[in-house]
Image (cartoon, rainbow, N blue to C red; front, side, top):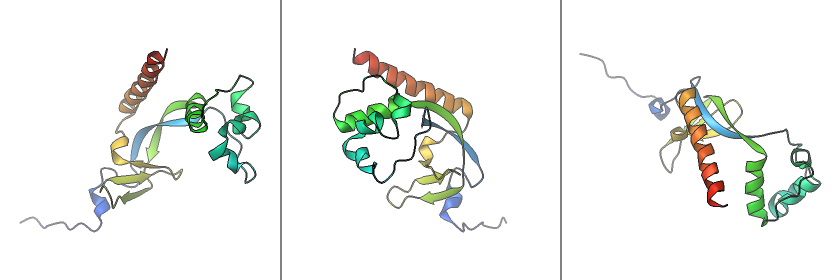
Length: 145
């Protein structure tokens, strides 16, 4: 008769284990942004445009006229305009289980967290997801012409 194996930790039920490699799609800045100091922190929440006019993000925008939008809309748009959609390996370094939803969250070596449903098993699957995201953005642009 086979011996029953007892689970020592709920994380043993997770799809990925520490050391496993998954794939993900992520937005990364096109250029390195200078760190935001305490004197500039107020700009992030209240006047993000100032980050691009005279703050640490000025090197990634250039001299083009900045969009004239409400500050939250401006912030979201600028993240897209100054980012690149990338496919990266995600090496699992830690696992936790959400007390609220029960889903597993994984941490990589850069201290970035991602829930299990958004990690992909192969680079091919991640490349397909990247293309799907780009099509969604393209559709959004077409719908707003």
